[in-house]
Structure formats: C-alpha cells, structure tokens
Amino acid sequence: MTTPTTPAEGKRAPAFTLLDQHETKVQLSKLKGRKVLVYFYPKADTPGCTTQACGLRDISGQVGDTMIIGISPDQPAKLAKFDAKHELGFTLLSDPEHEIAEKYGVWVLKKNYGREYMGVQRSAFLVDEDGKIASAWPKISPKDTPTKLLDALAEAG
View 1 (spheres, rainbow, N blue to C red):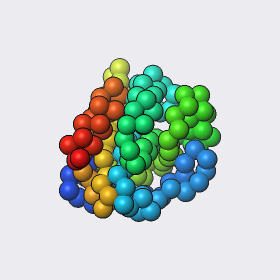
View 2: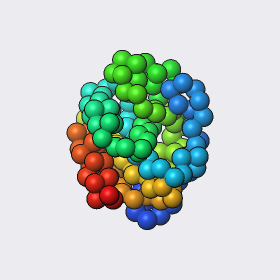
View 3: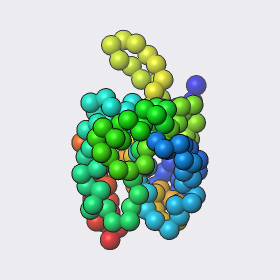
View 4: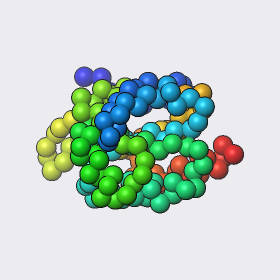
C-alpha cells in the first residue's frame, strides 16, 4: 500500500465533478477565475465537522469571491440536512466512493481505540484562480480552518 501524497503548492489541483447537497453537479474546472477553498471532512454533523463548517460559515462574509466547498463521503441528502440545520450556505459535495479524497491524498489509514480503518484525514486546500494549489493544510484542525483561510487570502492580497 502506498502512502497517499497531497498535491503540492503550485501544482494543478486534482479535478473533480461531484454532486452537491442539492444533487447538482459541481465541477472544479468551471470555477476557474476565482479562488476556491476545498476542504475535506470525515462526516457531516459530528462535533469536529460541525465546528469546522460553522467556523467557515461565520467568516464567509470576509472571503470576498472565494468559494467554500466541503467534501465528505456523505450522501447528498445527509449533506442537505447538515447545511439546513446549521445554515451553512456554502457548497457541500458528496464523495461516497472517496475517489476525490484519494486524488487529494486525504483517504488514509486511521487508528482509533486500537481499531484500524480507512477514512478522511481532515485537510484543506486553497485553489487559486488558475486552478493551482495556492496553500495546502493537511491534518488541519477544525478550529484552524477559518483562520488559515483568512490568513492565506490576506497574504495573497
């Protein structure tokens, strides 16, 4: 088994087309010309994932034209409930076969209470207007995601 590698800063972001919480297809390539935060989280409506999503919701008015996209293995219906319950207001994508998580190197072997299993490693990537990785934050904490995004956007100007 090979160790997954996350895309390096300056490299092209792996392409994806996934269904969002409204069952509408979203393609990364169609978002060229604007910055996109692509973040991966393990499971909708769990404590850490809720902290992360609500933190991003709370700063969404400060990120300008930057689009926020959360990706998890959850089905669109579960994502819609998560969005509605917490009034997130940004795109949540369903990656049930974890194909995109694998492309981004965030589908990893996890250990919890002596049990080993495959799952999503919470990570975030800021994709620039040209579709390249501007910043990568593997193993990011839920609380740090909004701060790291704001800092990266401030640095970019």
